[in-house]
Length: 150
Image (tube, rainbow, N blue to C red):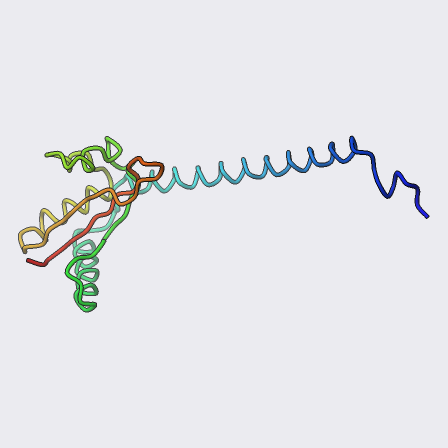
């Protein structure tokens, strides 16, 4: 029969092993959190720049989205959702519905507003940018909705 110390190691040894396991878990968590943060920064960086799509591509995409919504009996459609960091004021003007809020847009959200201004607004479509979630009670993501009902 193995010795008692092999079957039941002393508490100090167990505590040390547990502390090492916890440290390994903490390191893994920090590594995963850093990777997720880097991925998020890369996504925000990409979204904050122009899409690179031509006007024709953008119009076709808008048309496809709107036509699909109409076929499903909708009178409005959420066309885009983006982090508030793509606004120069983190979405404050949008949340407060301030005049000139559209000047805070950057990147793709700004392109969508321009597409609406140039092509959809003259055809009677409306657009709404609004904060659609409030993590921890503060403005979070912003949704862009296109509508066409009366």
